[in-house]
Length: 239
Image 1 (cartoon, helix red, strand yellow):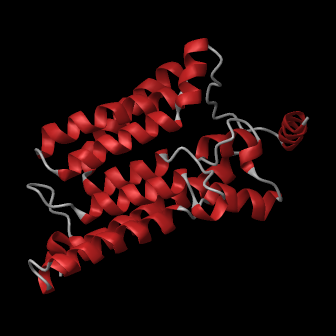
Image 2: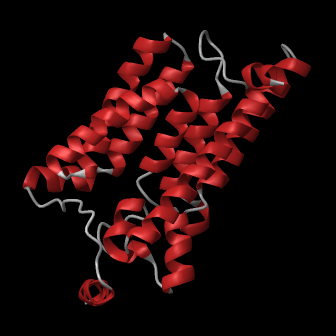
Image 3: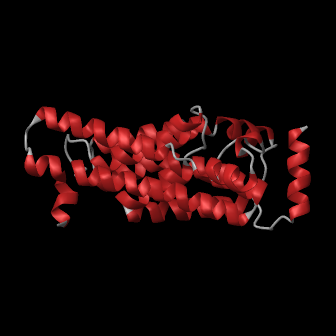
């Protein structure tokens, strides 16, 4: 059974069949992108708060902004949803194309994961305006190589603990990711996908990087906001 997720259904039943490989590549990408476009920050803010998270704070629909505006519970559900959709996209990629990372084949796990990250950033359901894709990208890394995930998480946690800047920890972690992946797994198309993910994450954090350079970036706090404080902040941001 697990052999299927290593080589994929396409290679198992249609080895060397180029048209089927192309169809599988397109299917993995499209399904991953559509899954990624299910932005749980937007869904939760509209369903439970009757508003759009993208109006406030950093204008992002990610976990950090949800925590800042709506609190810990909303952020936790957002994180869980965004990570789950990336995991499903990786699973679909493994099922159809496999997880072979060495050589000159395109691993379905990385392709499906990247597509979900792209969908989260530019969701087709929400006018192509989404979040910064950190949770989705982190889940893709966890699903494809748990050891690399642990190393990057330790780096991320150390930076955040020392600076209280989640954006800085995220950017630094993903800048290291392609180098670490190449060192631990060797050369292949998955390295190109890792570089694309790094470039996308840095691009999506361009405003955060500018604020970090200007010393105006907001620091993360685990302190729970009271309902009155949240309401006052929402009203202030609407003005």
